[in-house]
Amino acid sequence: MNACATGRSLGVCEVPPPTSLVRTHLPAAPARAETGRPIIAGMKPATWAYSENYVAEDQVLTDARARAKDFPAVPIGPGGGAALRFLAAAIGAKAVVEIGTGCGISGTWLLRGMSPTGVLTSVDVEAEHQRIARQTFTAAGFPTQRTRLITGSALDVLSRLTEGHYDLMLCDGDKREYPEYLAMAARLLRIGGIVAIDNALWHDKVADPSVRDAETIAVREVNKQVLEDEDWTPVMLPVGDGLLCAVKTA
Ligand SMILES: C[S@@+](CC[C@H](N)C(=O)[O-])C[C@H]1O[C@@H](n2cnc3c(N)ncnc32)[C@H](O)[C@@H]1O
Image (cartoon, rainbow, N blue to C red; front, side, top):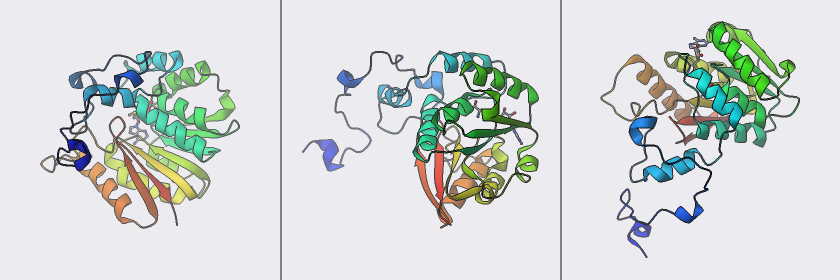
């Protein structure tokens, strides 16, 4: 039994990375400083990059990321995007609601996993972001009837949406409102529906108790609420900046 298998070297496992498994089309491993992503203790940067980019993005998403650079709308990472597509496909999502349209990167991943006739309702306070997102959805080949883009504040808009109608909800808006977004998810999702909360690790700050700014406190709070509420079955996916997912069970 090697040292890693015994658990004695947890976090410092020196088993060589499975380079023979690394797909040649993957980009070279980015340095930590370039990505700003947390690296799980003991994981090699190359392993993290392999995981994050395991499902590669196509030209549509590459172009959308380039457009997003001009706006204060940081897109979900490729690992988080792939997780969203996976979740949408796994439950055959027909009705998805998203807070934080941004430039359409998360929306495109969601649409690619949803039922072919499903509709993505996406809310953003910035009309200009949604104009760019519309370009992304069109470039990805989605007809306009597959998306319902609503400009407005998330809490205002979501309070007017139909209770129990949605299969999946993505929260990627104002971090300070995350606990209220969870309450909205409890109202809007059907039983068996899934809430996905992006930036759940919030740039390494959530796990550092010395960080006490309003955004970090709110993200920490929603993570705690999901964990403690028996009506949710949660998992923290360590993709990108953290994607907290939970199934609504009651
Ligand atoms: C992180 S970006 C979303 C990125 C997008 N999900 C993607 O992956 O392409 C956050 C977005 O939330 C929007 N936003 C911020 N506060 C909001 C609020 N209170 N209500 C609705 N949208 C909000 C911003 O305008 C911005 O476009």
